[in-house]
Length: 439
Image (cartoon, rainbow, N blue to C red; front, side, top):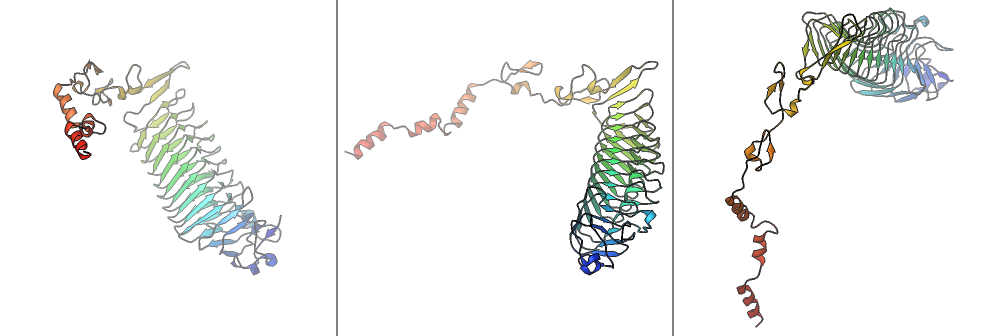
C-alpha cells in the first residue's frame, strides 16, 4: 500500500510539504513524520498515524483550526496514535481541534499514545470504534475532551489490554458532554484501563450496554469527579475481581434505564462509595459473588424500581439508603436457607388477587398498607340511562315529556329536520298565488 508523509511543517493542501510533492489521496496511509500540519481542507485518506514506518519517523501533529472533516477508509485503527517504543511524545492528542464549530470524523480511533483532543468548546462527531491497544505508555488516552465542548460517537468503546496505568479510551477532563451510541467495555489488565473516565463535572451519555473489565479494577465507566452519567441500556459487572460496570467515585449522579447485573466475581453492576445519587429504572440481578448495586455511603441516595433478584445468599442490593418508586411494579426474590428454593416477595400491586388501580374507583385507597389508589372513573348513576348497569347499581336517568318537546323545538331548523321540510312545503295560499300568476 502507498504511504505518504510530510517533509516539512505546513498546510495540508500544500503539495510542496509532502513526499513526492503529492497531496495524500483516499489511497494513501499518511504518517505525520514528526511534522506539524494544519488541516485546511476536508480530506479522505486510508489512515492517519504518528508511528514510524519506512521513511517516516514517529511523532507529529495535525491541527484543525476551522471546520474541516476527516474520513478514513480502512477498516481498523485508521486514526492511530504512535507507539511509545517508537518515541512518540505527543501529549493531549496528535489530532487537535481548536475551533468552536463542528467537524465530522469517520474513522476507527486507537491510541498507542494519544489520538484526538477537543481543545476549545467545539463539537466533534465521530463514526467509528474507539479503543486502547496493548502497547501504550502510562496515561495514554484515545480521546480527551479538555474543553466544555461536545463529542458525539457512534461506535463501540473498549479499553483493551494495555499493560500501563492511567490509560483510557475516553477522558472527559472538563465540563463538556460526551454522548455515545454503542457498547462500552472495560479493559483486561491489572493496570486498570477503564473504557471511559469522567474526571470532571461534565456529562457522559451512553445508549448501549456498559460492561466492566476482565482483569483488575477495570471499569466500563469511572465517574471520578462529581459528574453525571446517563445510560439507556443494561449495565453489567465484568469478569474481573473488581470489574465494575460503573464506578461512582465522586458525589456525582448515575441514571440508568435498563437492567443491572453483577459480575461473575466481585465486580458489581454499579459500585459507589460516596454520597452520590444512583437512580435506576430496571431489574437488579445479583450473582453468587457480587451485588448488582453496592452503595456504601450512609448519606447516598439510591432510588430504585426493581425487581430485585438475589442469588444464593447474595443480595441484589447492598445499600444503606434505598428509596422505591411510588406504585412500582416490583418483586424481591430471595433464597431459602438450606435449599435451592426461592421465595418471591411481591409489591402490593402485584400481590395475588389484588386488582389493578385501573379497575378501582378513582380516589379509593386500598391494599394491605393502603399504598394503592384507584384510578377508574365511575359515572354517577343519575347520568346513566334507566336500567343500565353502572358501579354496583343501575342507571336512574329518566327521559321526561318536556325533554322530548324541548328537543323537538330546538331541532326544528336542523338540516333535513321536519321543521326544515315544513318550511319548504307549499300551502293553499302559495298554490293560489302561483295559479293567479299564470292566470
